[in-house]
Image (cartoon, rainbow over all chains, first blue to last red; front, side, top):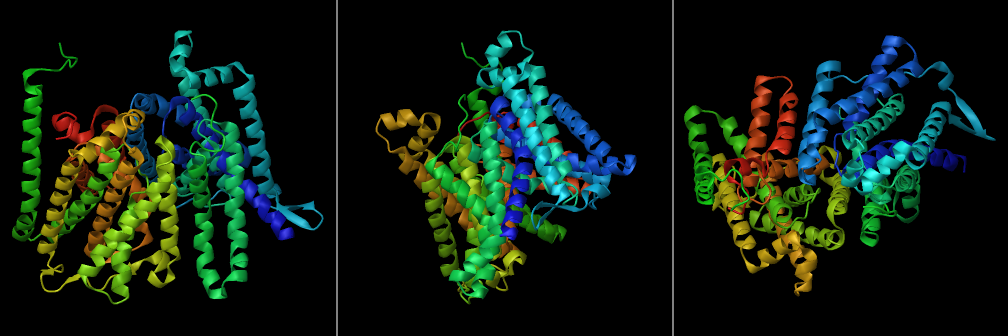
Length: 305
Length: 327
């Protein structure tokens, strides 16, 4: 039971991380109609920025803040230099162009930081574990991730649903020409939205950096999971992305933790041990395929398209 | 008055068609002369590189059939490459070395998977289609990782190439090269016959306006599914060739980035043009090779080139050579 609670929390933590990535991806997709494979590169950049600034400044918190600011800047520059020119092209050209960006960023990181990975160490006060339920200890840092991501989700929701900027973003999603005709600087708005998405991806990378090694290509596999999340959630829907991210995080983590034991009940020990890892890696994709077969537009299709 | 602003005499449709046909013939002729060059220059690496180009081009041709003509963007096409490869590898490991068994099994298995995947995926549209095909490919990828008997994550070495009972000896590299070239030309011919047939017109019609095609009485789902299965089978053949070429199979053959590479080569070459996939594959693999010879950081140049093609070249490389179309 205690193990189950712990695994659930791990699942929620993975889900929160996926939400940070998926929120940016779904904003850019829903509003600019852009398929951005380079989103994982911004996640990777965020992690590298944080690791570098942690060495330079010696402060974890300062490194996190600087890394987010740099990711925001990197995203806005990227939008102005390259992404802006892709909006008018079709989805296939987006795939080609942003795939080129993925290659470019991986190589750029190799040039600047070298082929070896980096690590980001946590400040001592985040290293321990706290007792969240009687007898259940949980690492502080993972709780920090969950809480920080929840805070970001709340801020994002308020920003999009309750502010003037959010209103413009939503308006831009439903009819970009009309927003432009009403005198809104749509180009600047797009740059801001892309930068916001980049900052969210960078933040996800920063938060993940102390748990995993910071390395080249770290964004690629998680990008696929984030894409799965926005598809399950319905493109352009932040609420959908949030729920789908938690669903995917939980299923992935719990599958990995409990599937071997569950299979052992019905199969021989040997068969269970070979089958379980493959089956638990597949579980998310089976879920995706099943959802799309029955709900071809995702669970929560955005109202405006 | 025509809408084209650049309709100078040189850019007349007739001229463009002639330019494109000439280019394609020259390209095939150069490919046919590669083994000769390799022998004269004593450069066997060129032969290996171009064999790979030809095999991946067959995969790209098959993807172009559904993507360029049918509007079905499959982000899981490398799965069929893997299925074809694993069919050969698994049969070889189990002692069935005959190509007369291996290759039909490879093609058949890929077709069968494509039938199931297509039947489920074609319920969705657009980006959702892209993602559901990816999801299926990921499942097959993880199944391959779970196949402990056949190498699991590490892959499986194939000790003996497919045997064709003394008719063809695939260990002869030059012969294998020409076999791949012949199969590539045959697959381009197959696609050209398909897209210009009544069947192909229905599939292309469904791409531009599916609702209208259904309204005039065509069961578009069935047509698209058959098209998807043909493409899967063709890619399965490419997978069988690839397994014979590298003497090795591994789950990496169907990693999602492989599917991405296939899409990139097709878009780079020009989706919806017959020779586009070949041009795209040649360009992509040669650029990759050339860049890695001149610099330690090849992707620093290759990446921006892809971006520039995406931004500026309508219809990919084939579009640059002679307009967009079916030629």
